[in-house]
Length: 320
Image (cartoon, rainbow, N blue to C red; front, side, top):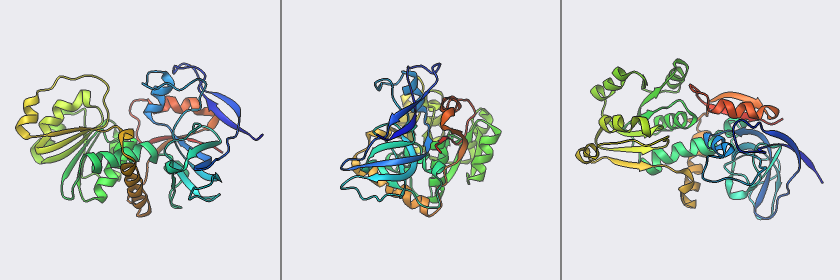
């Protein structure tokens, strides 16, 4: 029996630290890939699951997180991968915060050599959500103007880069000086402080916004409806509560409002997303931004960092 290190959630609740355990290393069966994990990406949904507030609660104890990158350690029968190949994964069968993770082969993807493992760990949920919001739900077109409302998170940063590569004019908002500086560095045409109502008013005065990707609909939805041009589209990626709106604004401009739930995709849509991301990575138009890295033993601190206000970019756990 081969043993590996893993960090486990023993009890639901953010007040309970993750516990390091020695677990039996999984083995790859037919259609499966065992990945030697090098980096793990933590997403807000991972913190909700750990807290016990998410709709789905795994059986305790469990190894958290879905997104990771590493090297193929075992390739089961019927899989296209080879041992030693660099890959990123979008969902595991055994949990990602560990030295090894077992995955279905159709949730494992080749990682280009120019992309670091840390960046690869930022692809599964954030970059895929950005692609789905932009192209599958938002139907973004070259020459249009996009507003990313709350662009400094890993989804917004990926959406910014993908939109610029697709020929859109991008207006991006952020709440901190550091975040706004990063938006400018990544090529946003206009950068605004979404806490400054004057700057938001200037957007409407100077730009015809065709598409908005919204990260906090319960705060911004009415403002978004006001900012959108005739026949504009609004794609909701994030929301934390209820809001009262005036549907007349939707009627007058014939605005389309769509939601994004990443795991609602069809298999064909999923494969299309990751085919597009691979192309964007190899053409170097998508470079995931990493804010901070933690070692495996400090996984609890990494979970805390993900929900801090003013964050920008991705929080990653590095597995030596």
